[in-house]
Image (cartoon, rainbow, N blue to C red; front, side, top):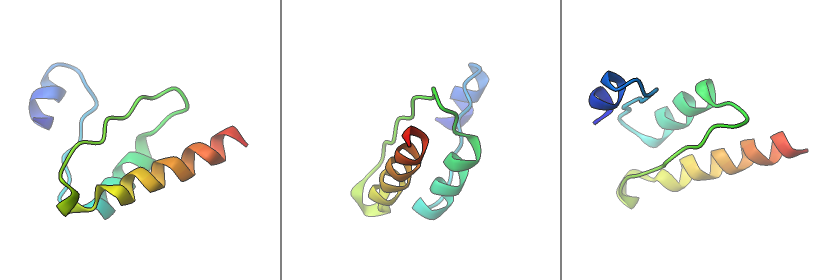
Length: 61
């Protein structure tokens, strides 16, 4: 899916686990970006969401 999105001009990244997802997102995120987090609970994406929330709180301070 990430390859197809990139082919259409999107900035998409595929990673193997939540820790790498957090690192990948935080390297690329900007103040007006919209991020879709999609996956199963089995890969612990709540950690990604938590990191994004913490980042967002820091941006609004």
